[in-house]
Image (cartoon, rainbow, N blue to C red; front, top):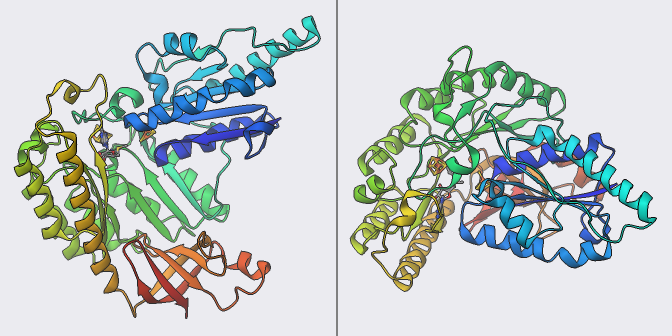
Length: 458
Ligand code: SAM
Ligand code: SF4
Ligand code: F3S
């Protein structure tokens, strides 16, 4: 049984896809890259911006012809679009050839559902000696509860670096964001389960873990009440784990206790992703973010003082409905003042069901696009200037593979999470290349640009 899992969206979804692959592998599934050869195609979907959802529906639509040629093909849709209101209606009407629609918190039901469809397909085949069309209606497992379901098998994409969810869902209801509606209320995993998972990963040769949550700073162990800073210190004690990262932090909950844990624990990387979203207090209030521009500046100042060489990245939305030119100018001013390492910039996308979806726009699409371009250009210059200062430094790189752009080079990441491409001493044979991947190598930075460094092994 050949399986193809297509993943959209964030690291949480990538981690869910590893679980989906775990379920498929437990049913003797093998993985392929080509939909024409697949017996099962799974779409793990994202709903955060309109473009992501539209792309998905285009791609599912394109499978209709494939399903007509191969009626035994099983199509599964899971992830964040499955929480849309009227999702059953939508699939029945527009995508009747989809076999399974399953919610993000229902993956523990996937194996039974796949067995049910396989049985039905066999039955259809027995009766007609040939499968002519998908005779059964799709089956649905939309999320009914938001309990944590431990123990779903997992096929990891990478042996030396892994993501570990510490919590699911979100309670913050930022007025632009669909995530609380599609991922449900926030719930934290038991700290012991997290530590056991990280320990098992280390025993299996993993040296880097990224702890995942929509707002990791509000982590609270259900049975022991330990908070995120304490959890970080516990993960730091797991032998063999050399790099610990976490995403995302929320400025309303990121605090001095977490900064101290980062400063004092050797294995926690000097990397912080702290989305500010807007530099204007008016817009932060309209977004329901619950911190001010000054709060944000104070946090960044405190973190930089405590953690030398800290890499800071952030998310920012341009064109929130109530944003005026004066608000945007505040955002531009904030990035010029703080000089963060990198910014993930998004044009506001209206998400039906969220509070901001009802707000009128203060600026035109053209004005928003012009501001967006200016923000990107300004940040790129800042990122480039920061990176130039690294030239001449020796940095430790976790080698992730061979560079996509230049096969004669390795590619890896610094402790701060920046990309270094470097020509290694030994990159003269495939065997040697393989031997460095997943190891820590010191490199000297010889040149830099906005997004990456060129280095050489020292
Ligand atoms: N929980 C994280 C946080 O609060 O920072 C981020 C979650 S969200 C998946 C990632 C980013 O997408 C957000 O930080 C925000 O910048 C962006 N985003 C979310 N909803 C959006 C929308 N409706 N339009 C544009 N960007 C959006
Ligand atoms: Fe969305 Fe806000 Fe929750 Fe992040 S904190 S997932 S932006 S609602
Ligand atoms: Fe997208 Fe869902 Fe992640 S909406 S960004 S896949 S939580």
